[in-house]
Image (cartoon, rainbow, N blue to C red; front, side):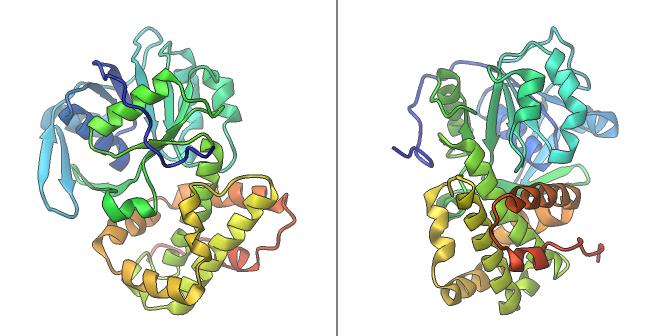
Length: 329
């Protein structure tokens, strides 16, 4: 039975201690919303950003509503082995993770949740922290940090057609700690779900976001400009389809199943994306992420193309699209 994109049961949420390791756009959003929901949250940041957070607090601005909130929470710059939390949320880009694995390996916290894009699996993370401590998650949210403000968008309503905040165990089990984590994020307002196939979920996600990012790069990360190019929207959709075919050929699920809407008639999809690309939501959740995450997108591209090369499935459109990243405009 497929469980992907269905709410988990609702256990009673007590007062877990949570560390957010990485206070960029998504980490800052997590920290603020969890504090607002009444949880005991600490954030790990370094240097000038840590000083700013201590002095002025964490400012979240809703990109769609224009409202702002300021949160004051404990800030640490290192994670000693003996300082433990019920959940450590590792929220950073893939190419940044290797540097923090030794610190996470030494720490004794029981649940390490990697909120990180990846197409290459979890072997390095398992080796560092052990599968018994490793959990995986990914948000339906986007935004960017500029100056001392985190501007954000949280996926709700129709936005969840594209992606839901999702958590999972590497082995696909539905554990007490997973249900508790889902309940925590539900209380914080993220409308979370869980997946029995979180590795396939992430590979599917990468297949989608790579195509969107590289189509945006053709237009200087201007989503409205991309909306005006039916040819590039068509290439974006075809690249996603090619990625899905590679995953299926390798025995991976395209999950959640709702993403099979990318196989609707391509003319219809081009019309839909011509409208969607002109919205504020896409600018915040997709275009800004592509612009600010070039290093991550290059790393994910290399991972995904290496995976796809083992499938013997041709990807002519994707290979043409995922060329060298255009220079900054």
